Length: 334
Image 1: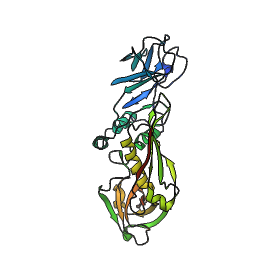
Image 2: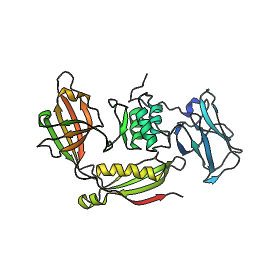
Image 3: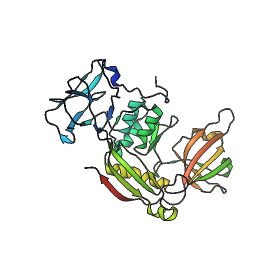
Image 4: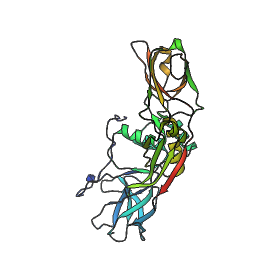
């Protein structure tokens, strides 16, 4: 049975090990990540790397320098639960870190691990085709709802229980089909407002989080210069801690800026029951003489209006042409 979205993700802590003093969350690791091993035995020579088996350990460092004489293995802890262990020759006196390869980094597989579903195949294929992969450790308490949003935000995607396939890219591809075309006779009780409070023309993107160091290993700054000339420098930060390479970080930042570097019109209207099959995340065409923007909108919410006949739709569309986005700065820790 699927747990409620408001429930916390069931992450184990070191309290499951009898006699363990400090309480830490034993992380679930996806893709490639650099983590802090958790001490497991009293001698300080055995550590736990993840609360599941790993595909491999690529490097172990002590205070940033390569540590010789280590081994790792997948096994079972004292409760019989599968874990990945690191063995070192002697108890280290500095900061220990390990670069590991964990569970699948495909965002669809991560979602399925957090919130088991059987309808993620289309999203899994989309991520594979676009070479979208993530790497990070789930080591903080959060609700299932927050975790889903966190993971999908890393790749410019959204989710909805009413969405076929559960998760999809946002905004949808310009080549995606238009699900419905609505005219003046199809729309009633409409309203429209222009959202300027979230308009951004310059975006700072920290990414590639190092869990051992507690900071992002890389960052970049992207800008929509044409939009900045019109609206001024409006800055924001987009954290992508599980994105590992600059190519993917820039792609997400570009898509994010192209949508938000323009004023966005948000329309709400009532329409007939034939629109009840509209789903969040799809394009619709709106042609109405009083609407501020005629053209294609993305559906963001559908109230089917059961019992009252009408369907209430919320949709949004940016105004103007898609702005070009340029890379202003890129940096990496060393």
